[in-house]
Length: 71
Image (cartoon, rainbow, N blue to C red; front, side):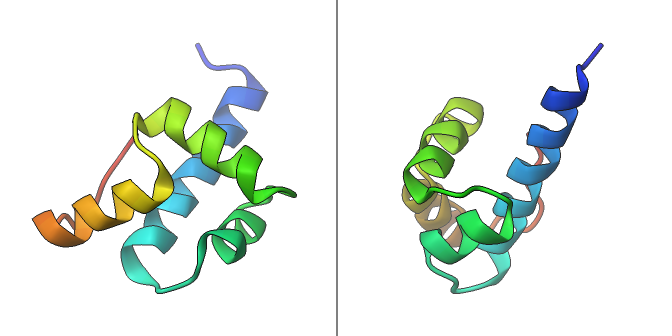
């Protein structure tokens, strides 16, 4: 069972995955669009959930051609 905070964080990370996958927005723009005030905090949280930095994740997804990634 997820807490409300965990549920909201999952939604924010899923939105970040979508934006990393489908746009050329920079990490600061993506972090803001996903409700993170600081891009450094966004990167830390993203790394915790996805086991990779947002930049590495984007490169991997683009290289491998994944379209839909879920956490």
